Every structure is written in C-alpha cells, then in structure tokens.
Amino acid sequence: MMSEVTVTRYKLAKDIFEHILRVTEHEDQKAGRIIISIAFLSTTSATIYGIFINNGITFIINNIDVIPIFFLLIMACSILGAILMLIGIGPNIEDVEPNPLVGEDYIPQSLYYFKKIALEDNENWRNYFFKNEIEDILKKGSSDYLQESHVVSNRICFKIKYIGYSKTFFILSIILTLIMTFLGIIN
Image (cartoon, rainbow, N blue to C red; front, side, top):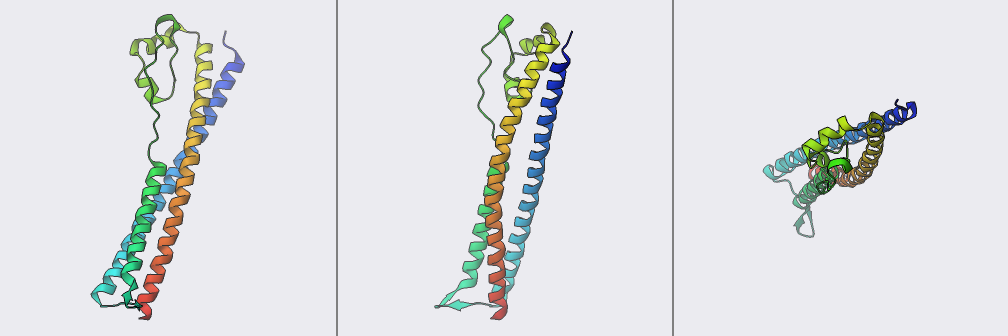
C-alpha cells in the first residue's frame, strides 16, 4: 500500500518544479522582448545615422565629427547587450557520465533530466518502472523534482543577472541615440 505522505510529497515537489519552470519561461519571454527592443533601437539608430550622412549633417567638436562616434558606440552597446542576453538565456547543459549501475543495483540518475535519461541503458530504464514499488519510484521522483528545481533556480539567477547587464547596455544605447539625434538636429 502506497503512503499518502509519499504521494503528497511527490505532488508538492512537482508543483515546486512546475512553478520554477513558469518563472524561467517568464524570464525567457522578458529577454525576448528586450532583444526585440534592441533590434528596433539599432534599426532606428541606423536610420537616423543614415539620414544624417545623406544630408551631410555633422557635429564637430575639436575638428572631429562626433555623430559617427556616437553611432559606433550605440551599435557596440546594442551588440554587447544582445550578446549578454544570449549568454543569459542560452542553454547551460551539464556534462553527464553514463550510469555505472546495472541489474539489481540499477537506479536511474534522474527521472526528469533529459540528458541523464538519454545516457541510461534503455532496458534498465524501462525495467526500473516495472520492477520497483511505486512508492520507491515516487520517492525518487520527488527527490529528482527537487534536484531539478534547484538546478533550474540557479539557472534563473544566472539568467536574471545577465538580463540586468543587457538592460544596462540597452539603456545606454537609448541615451546615446537620443544624444546623437539631438546633436544632429541642433546642427
């Protein structure tokens, strides 16, 4: 007979994991919106710069036209911001070794992490579910959900840090675009 406590723990661990997945999906969506904004700003800046170049608009300080310098800084900040965003939202897959356990001693490395599952012996993997008590499988599932929740939570913290870095460069690009536009208009 399966313990109600085991089932409750399993459901709780699953709920925790699903909540954390929703958080990481939210951060991915936020990052996508920022990348779209960076692309839009880059296009807008390039258009403004093109208009200035085609109309011979310059802003000279100490015999140097600063508008091209501002444009290069805008592009550098935009590119750096996009790179930081891609680092933050890109995959971070840990290296996994094949499972050394076989036969009667076999326990899967994880019930949920795809890379660990892929390295399992298929027969051992399937037999684990039919040769073990459901309560033991649920306990393993609970432990694995909590382990994956921890891994994904750490990944979210990394992602948020890089989204913050990217936003800093995006804001700097906005400021530089406004300055470049202002300098071109007042000239």
